[in-house]
Length: 438
Image (cartoon, rainbow, N blue to C red; front, side, top):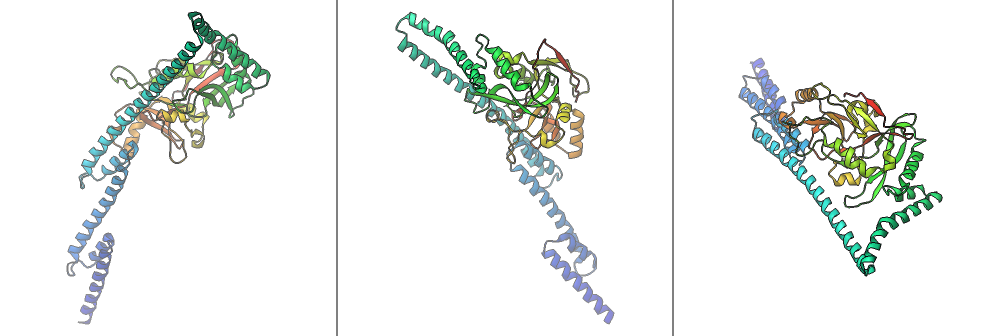
């Protein structure tokens, strides 16, 4: 009789301890306690209830994490939400939330495209108004000064010949006074008499003593607000030097563009450096804005033969301005800290993404994304396949990490760091082979 009473007391003690754990929402621990007395009172039922509630609590925690990610209006957070929701299919409205996140990604992407187009339109409109305003001012001056047609012709001749002559004379005096930077600003793209030769001499003097790792000035590009015409000298990091030749990359990200054009047609156009918008822009619009004719003499063509995503080689290109490949970036920037880059205000104006942590940006590399690495990423991370439908190109993240699975080629948030080979003793149009295939 005493042994039976003692066993009952032990069962009751275990049962009450399990109830305390249950009330404290420690369902897994409570289930283990109830399991010790399966035949006592309703312990068996309580055990099943605790197991079910423990599972539900775990699913609720996962759901909450996904819901938190989905609350952020950016592609990365929505992709993360999809990944988490996919781990609890059928739970609550997880399947519906996955579709909702996919729609959100489409909306964000469309908004980014619209914002980019609007920024370009606004910049063009501002430029149009500026030119119209300048024209009105010029007309007013001409009207006030030129009473007759002879005076009008005289004003045109003054603008065409006298103003360049005045600027040229000013630059000569600045050089004589040792004001080299001021003279450079006056001469850049003046194209009068031997102004290009003087620009060449200034650029050569700036570069002649440059060493690997040093920062040099070469060329000029807008770096302030997109509505301003002011160009500032471009700062370049010397990556390599071979005698009079040296490889330069811009210290800051100077602009922001998609890898391919918005009208890219996957049925007719292969994603490659050769067909990219970035290549056309760097060797066209950018080069014409950034470099005086004197500086352009120093730019050497570089032969590029990069590997395509399917493992084959694309057509060789010979470019004066280009982007680093993954392999080159690994060689010249061996650690993530060195690969971090900040954008100019001008690049931000055209949509460059900037990290809220340390102000760094994402910048393009010239390689199309490696499909094998994308497949590996999808397998390892259980990522959403639908978000990788649009072709991608490699890039460097805000923390300086390589993103070899890349990002969508139409994304406007990625910045551009031009790279050039220059020769301060140019003799002919030489070509330096570039064998990077990564």
